[in-house]
Image (cartoon, rainbow, N blue to C red):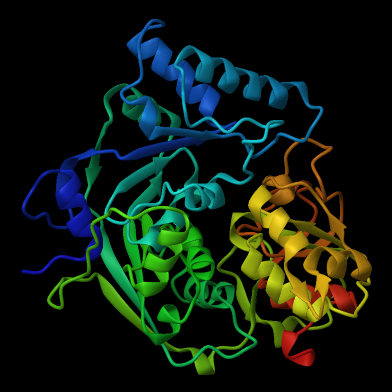
Amino acid sequence: MGMTITEKIFAKSAKRKNVSAGENVWLEVDVLMTHDVCGPPTIAIWKKEFGDKAKIWDKEKLVIFPDHYIFTKNSHANRNVDILRQFANEQSLPNYYDVGTERYKGVCHIALAEEGYNVPGTVLFGTDSHTCTSGAFGMFATGVGNTDAAFILGTGKIWEKVPESMMFTFKGKMPSYLTAKDLILRILGDIGTDGATYRAMEFDGEAISSLSMLERMTLTNMAIEAGGMNGIIAVDDVTRKYLEEVGVTEYETFESDTDAVYHSRFTYDVTKIEPLVAKPHSPDNRDTVRNVQGTKLTKCYIGSCTGGKITDFRYAANLLFGNQVKVTTFVVPASTAVAKQLEEETINGISLKDIFEKAGCTIAESSCAACLGGPSDTIGRSVNGDVVISTTNRNFPGRMGSKSSQVYLASPLTVAASAINGVITDPREFL
């Protein structure tokens, strides 16, 4: 019996010929990632269990990105970064990307790709639910709690159950008004926030093959919003080209066998999908943009690991070019590399950064910013009664700040179109 791509990676990591869904195996971890929110408690648990004088299992394989609450005067948030800094010194960590230095990168999930930690066929764990983003590179990537992370820190291993796989096939040629965000919102509306619990969500089809690496990362990023253990896309020429550009040349690729067993299969024709939103207060509360068109907004937000990549800003800038925003609109590049690209890339000779500024947007420093609410001085944090449309991944009550704010999730095209009109707007109006 054949295996899925996720099962093959599990088998390789567990040093087994084959594995099947439901089995428990010991995985050898290739990379452990943490940040300023979960890093300190992970370190505290590790020290308690392994001892103050212990050395971590492999300092080359631990990657730390402060990224969540870093541009803030909040003393607790600042203390968290101090703990990471101290730990990096104690353990002589080569892969600590400190804030306030040339090495600072921005949001961990984007930085992992840019810095070449996303290697096909490998196993990556992170103390963040959106670690599944890295699965776009044909690897297994998932989020774990602080205790599991502390165990990996000490041993380099983790005991995991092999997940069942679900296949999502997108046929047809992507229309100009659709993005990967619309595709994942379509799935979420169909299966709900628990429809893929502890399962691998595999994506394929002509429309997926046509997507850039960064757009593919939007799909795998939001696998967790369906309860997925991981999202995964097989390696192709698009993946290889990206990896070559970031200096990753040695890796093993896997593909699902034709006779692999799936929990379920879903097939879509992208030409029949409309621009979509997730209405408050859940990512699966799907509706078409057309149905909620005209909803009055107080803020628009383009940023986060889901919607702060250069591809997202290209979509938005194309619509905002020569237009003015009617409501407060935040542009938050996910990484310092993306921030640089905003200055370098142009449309008709005008940089994307200038397009956003001329349109009246506020550009913030690269970080998670308002996506996870955070301290009161976090950029663009929603206050009472705000109605926000955002390219982020979650719209639970209080996710972006106040519990009384309403957050709609949408593609960068829909957010840009809505910013221009000050009400939720179908991007087809501008395309």
